[in-house]
Length: 272
Image 1 (tube, helix red, strand yellow):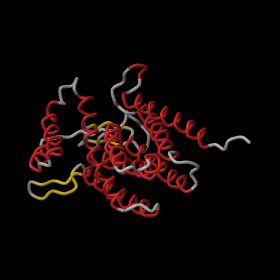
Image 2: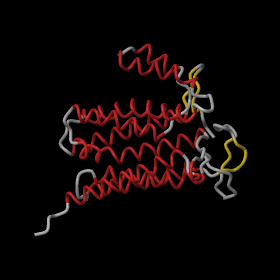
Image 3: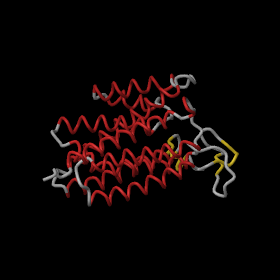
Image 4: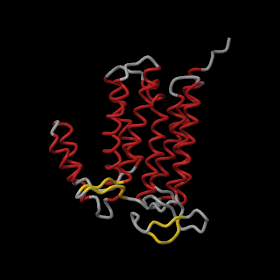
C-alpha cells in the first residue's frame, strides 16, 4: 500500500502518522464545538485533546511492549519510552525529542484507550468537571479517531486478517509484516464499524436519557466490534482460543452493560 506518503530528503511522513494527526485535529475541532454548545470554555477541548494524545500514545506503546516482551522486540523501544516519560515530567524538550526518535514502531489502540482515559479523567478530577457529562462529549470522538486510525493501518499494511479468497481480499507486499497472500482487510472492517458507531452515538447524544449513557454505549459497541473482528485477525490466541484484545473487549462490554444497567436504575422514575 502506501506506508510513506511523502519524503523530503532524510525526512519521511508516514500515512499512519498523517491519519493520527487528522484524527486528533478533527476530533478536537468537533469536540470544541460541542464543548462551547454545552456552555463550557473552549480551552477545555484543547486540554482534553492534548492529554488524550499524550496518554493515548504512551498507553498504546506500553501495551505493545507488554505484548512483545516474549518475542524480544520490546527492548528496542524501552529506552525511547523512558526518555519520553522523563521529558514530560521534567518539561525537557530534548529528552522528549530523543525518546521519539528512538521510540520505534508499534501502537495498540486498546492500550491507548486506557492511557487516554486515565490522563483525561485526571484532568476532569483536577478541574471539578462532571466525569459522566464530559465523557459523553468525548466518547463519539474516541471511536471516530479509532476509525480514522484504521485507515492509517490499512495504508501501512498492518493489522490485517487471515487469508481469504473473497473478492475484496488484499495483499500487503510492503506491510508489517509483508504478505503476498490475499487476506481479510480487517482494518477496513473495523473502520466501517467505528464510523457507524460514531454516527449512532452522535444521534444518541441528542436524545440521551441520562449522563453516562453515551460513554458506556461506546464501551459496549466498540468492544463488541473489536471482539468480532478479532476472530479473523492474526493476533496470538490464548485461553479458549481468544486473543488478548478479545479479553479486553469482553471487559469493555461488561463494564458498559453493568454501568448502563446501574445508571438506568438510578435515573428511572420512582414508582408513585
